[in-house]
Length: 392
Image 1 (cartoon, one colour):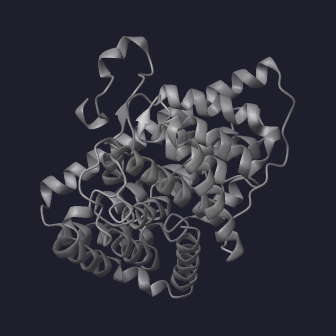
Image 2: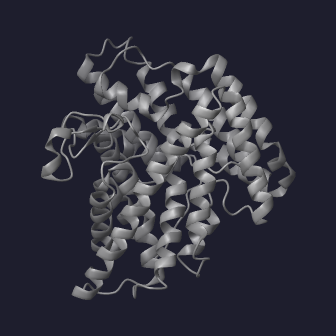
């Protein structure tokens, strides 16, 4: 998984550089959408569910996850980034890891529980190595499929695989972005209060993103039933939007803008535009993850909040970076660890408060609709236990 993530990260870097030096490629985004849509329509209908298929495989293991998921999502994601879609990388890393790992289930004659642990470990390895955050990756793998519960039976495989995969990716000199929070004030009552207020904003943003993603996706499917045509139309909308705004900062991963959010004041509506570009891209059927765009949205929102909240701009950007992600995936513990791994332990309390508040305020919404509720966020929702978010 570490080698796969390293190769994927090098490919993404190539795609990004190529697109930015040949901007005319963005005009071909509709053709890219049509081509990838045809690929999935004729070859990948059984793996189109993506990360939700992995979550289903953990809850109720059925047939082996088709190996073709790995090359299909790799090709689709690289094409999305090369031609100017707004997407991330975590979804691709997880799907490649899960599809490859599950091929070992049959020859090793794994039991149902062993196979669940194998997929959890694969998710941990893919996440930890693609972001360079092995501790967060391990906890993410154990936390993401069951809201409010952690599968401690997978604790050693998850941590071992995430740490090893990250080490292998670093041996390949895989490109990871480094972030720095310039100033972190001492904890005071007022600063804790400001952090809670920011966490509320991050939670609302996470819930809006999740709901809008599913709503726009439903509209696309209702209006355009044929996936290739849906992706063609979505690609045309995004390409025209890039032309209209006159910048490429809202497509691709958006790493330069994320880095800038820690150091300089951004436009206060940057997070809204990134949200729109990402929702249209992914809802139309393009491949890629949601997490790196969520990093952009959260960091840009935190940057915008510095106009009103008297906390350092870099700290607010860092809090938003992980807190919006925590609310949109219902993985607060993994996001706390990610904040500490990326930004340093000094920001730990601020990051923890923001992630917890965002998680609680985002409600029972998620970018992963197949998540199951193991422990509801409030006692009044105990009847939700055992239900998937798509059933609510």
